[in-house]
Image (tube, rainbow, N blue to C red):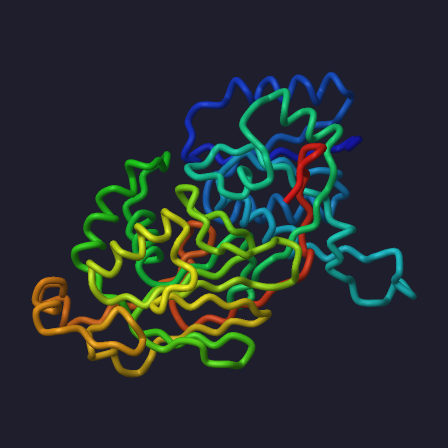
Length: 350
């Protein structure tokens, strides 16, 4: 049973309800004799700093009350901490980042999607979370790295990353599903899909206009299983690339993904690997096809291309990491096998 617990709360996470469940969780933990340290974040980077301090000061468990972005920030903080391991041959040896020496993380889901919490069988229920904190087990999970920055779920390039960028650019306080409606609508009508090059373990697997999703777990936003074969403990990243230029093609991909029938299509590339590199091509793809090898007809171009002004302006290929803006291309994605530990309920299975 953990004796010292640090609780990091993001007060502007998407879910404004749930305070009663958190208070019940706190009461259960205090009645069990644990020492609670409660912190609220006030801006970007706070969760990372608080998690790093927790690892360095010997906290037994970190509970993060927030969404997927806050969880990723906490993992970043734990990775920042340098904790010497018992195997150090001498005190002067350089410190190691050994996951077994880091406190595990328990998610109290308060975000909009809570993708990782749902995958781990966690919900915002005070009793269930208290039982997991006191009696759950630690599950080791792979960490993804995007240009050295950790992420737990997905790295997205293209359309979804542009939506995320616009959502966060206009973000007020609490982020819920309604905040995505207008940015999604605007992006759908104005976005021009960039030409990207994707290499997996040194092999070119795709070059053309499209969007790419890479990650550790099969679940994506809205319950979509885009990365069908992904496992969080296999030491691999799964990559799904959708060849798309037109709005019509984007709709087709969305329908097939919702029906879990996208893998195996000629305009979808699915790979697994340890290192994934994604860059913008020097020149835009000119044939207008939703397939890497086909070409669209003139009538398809007229019916589906964005307005002329957008045609002349190539988009800046954005990146999103776990639902937060992650910069721009180029990126290199790597995997740290079993680099983090999360508390899961007894009986949870992948």
